[in-house]
Length: 497
Image 1 (tube, rainbow, N blue to C red):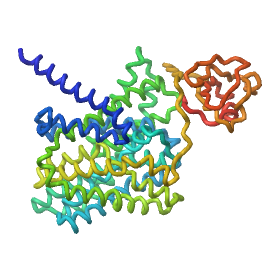
Image 2 (image 1 turned 90 degrees about the vertical axis):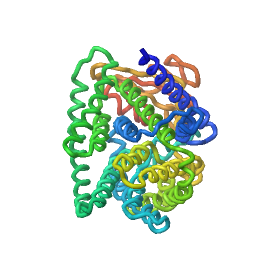
Image 3 (image 1 turned 120 degrees about the vertical axis):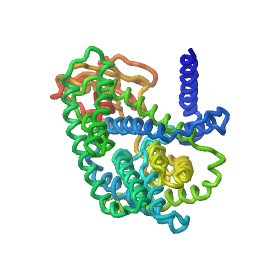
Image 4 (image 1 turned 60 degrees about the horizontal axis):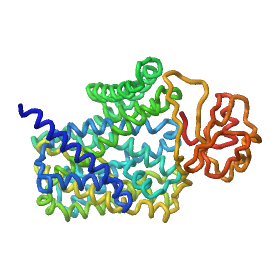
């Protein structure tokens, strides 16, 4: 009889925490504080030593929930990274995601060992846990300030963050295994770690590519009765890809990201907007949930002793380890000193370190809770220090790109079958040849026509006498044959459906 009451209390608590976190994003955006810190603050306030008095110290549950969260986050990242945007930055992104992660962990570990007096395995473990970055944290902060980045800088940050999570996860698990083996005097197994990591990455990447190709054919050929079933199918694909690849001893995290990228490259994906919206919501839910868990797992009275080493390591990570690794990896490529500096400093941390910090605790490594407390400070301070100056730093270093204002209204076409023609949105810039020209005088090719114009908060009918003005968002319906000519007139489309 008490079960419904308990369930009601749990749902009410979760609802209040999630709702409070979401509403808090408005405040954090206005005052320039990274959103992640708001989520952590809610968790701290709700924790056993906060106002909520919620007693939570279940690292096993946090890890399992974290794995699910990472699957959702990585798959969403892949879906929003089509191969066309990944190819120009693939080489530097891959180098940053591999050599960069290892170099960042190594430099931070060296400082923790030499200045902090930690044993090498523990120092390396801390470095591995905080070695990956989260582009979503950077772009969320930039969106709040109305700032956008140059295309190749933004694409590199985004691609790197999707690729480096699996590497950081493998590094953390491998080092945790080594610490345990060394404890039982079987340190010889350490020599197999690089080979094991390489094997898992190769298997994960290959499995993800194959799964992505097969899933694309399945999604485009199956005929489901409701549009709402397509996101359910893609969610099932993500879970299956991760699970099967992991059972094959490959990197399930790498596989799920690669599968998302391959699916994103499909030109005729049915109900694409609905799929992307649902997975975007899943990813936000996962991010919020993991930062809330980080706040709940943190005990302020226990954190005090970790404040000084956490502050020192956070400063080294932000100002030395990450910038040095980025400079090393980008040296062969044509990135300017300003671009390299920006990419190096703004490598913010996301939900991944929260999950990784629970692995040593669950493994029973001596002093693992101390590691978690130190990681807590590193994540918070690393998010706070560069996070609050991301927009200012982008302007100062000259990496701000030309931002296209978002339209007040958008047209979304959701089709269950491949359509020959496409509806695309174009922003009318002053430099375009069609700017200031009535629609009747625009030389549209056969098979192309304007369907609607968004001007400020107005929706305009596409009449021949309507003159295109700077700042307009024009929706053009065009056949495949007419599309090249349309792009000559209007430039690159804003949204491709």
